[in-house]
Image (cartoon, rainbow, N blue to C red; front, side, top):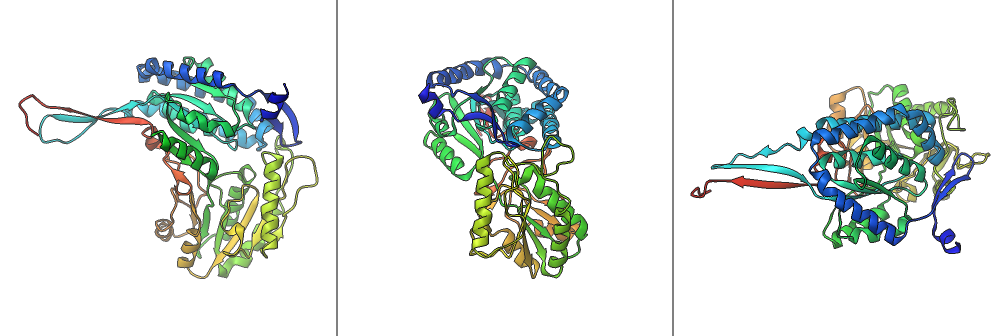
Length: 467
C-alpha cells in the first residue's frame, strides 16, 4: 500500500477549497497491455462497421450529453474549477461536435476520384488502428471530443490518457460511450501518471498519438512517436496576440478582450494573452480595462454571480503568482491584482500588467491564469512584429471597424488561426490548431478527420493499357 500511495497522483481535488474528493489507483503494466490488446482486437470489427451504425452510436453520445449537461457540468466544475455556466457550455459544444462528425464523416471520407489519362484512380480513406489520445484538464469533455469524434467515426479505436486531476470526467466519458452502444474496446480510459505515458507510444498496437498539453510533454511524445515511426498531432498552447486597430470601438474591444482573457480563469490556450493597442488610445483603453476589472467577482464557480473562478490546482495558482512576481522584479508594472485571493482555494486575483519589454521572461512566456498583459504600438508594422515575437503560433485576434484593413493585418500574423473582431473561438466546422511551437495538425472541421487515416491510392487500368 505504501508504494501505491507514493505513485498515485490520480485524484479529484476541488480547487474551490483544495479538498481531496476522490482518488484512483494507477493501472499496472499488465492492465495497460490488456487494454491496448483489446483496443487492437476491437479495431477490425469497428473498421468494418458502417458509417450509418457508427453515426447512430455517436449521435446517442451527443444526446446523452445534452440530457445530462447539468450533472456533467457540475462534475467538471468540481474537478477543475471552471464556472458552472462555462462547464455546461462545454458539454453542449462537445455534443455539437459529436453530431457534426456523425452527420458528415461518410461524406468527408468518401472515395475521391483523381483525374488520370487512362483508366481510373481514386483516394480511399481508411482507418489505421488504435490512437493514443493524451489530453489536458482545462476542457475535460471538449478535449476528449476533439479527437474522439473524428477518429471513432473514421473507424479507429482509441485509448485515452486524460489529465490526472480530472479522473471522474475521464471515466464518465467512457461510461457514456458504452451506454450509447459503442463496443467494448473501441474507446477506453486509462489511469496512469503522466510521467509513464511515453512508454505506451512504443507499443506496436498503438498506431498514432494525439496530444494537447505543454511544450515539453509534446516534444517528449513527438520524439517517442518519431522513434517508432508513428504519426503524431500536437497542440501545445499559445501566447495569442489581440491587436486593436486605430478605428476601433474601444468599449467593445475592452469588453471582448477582458471577457476573453478571463474565460476559464485565463486557462485557455487561445485566450488573448497579449493585448496590443495603439499608443494614441493606450491610456483610455487601460482606464476602461481597469473599470471593467472592478466589476469582476471572484468566488464560488457554482455561483451564478461569480465570473472569475479558481485555477485548476494549488500548484497552478502558485505558478502564476511566481510568474507575476518575476515580472514585477524585472520592472513590469502590476497595475491591478498580482496576489492570491484571501480565501481557501486555488484563487489568483485578476491581474493587469503593463510596461513589458523583451528583457523580461513574461514577454515570452504563456501565463495560464487571469492575467491581462497590455502592450502598445506606434504603427501597424510594429504591432505585427510584436504579435509575431513569440515562439508560439496558435490563435490571434485583430479588432477594428475596417474589416478589410483587419484582414490585411490578419494575413501577416504567424498563427494557425486568426479571428477578426472575435477572440479565437471554437466551432465544429472550423479547424483548430497552430504553427511554430504551438504544434502541428488540425482537429475539428473536415481537416480533423484526415489526420489519422490512410489516404490510399487505388489505380485501375486494363492489362494492355499504358499510363
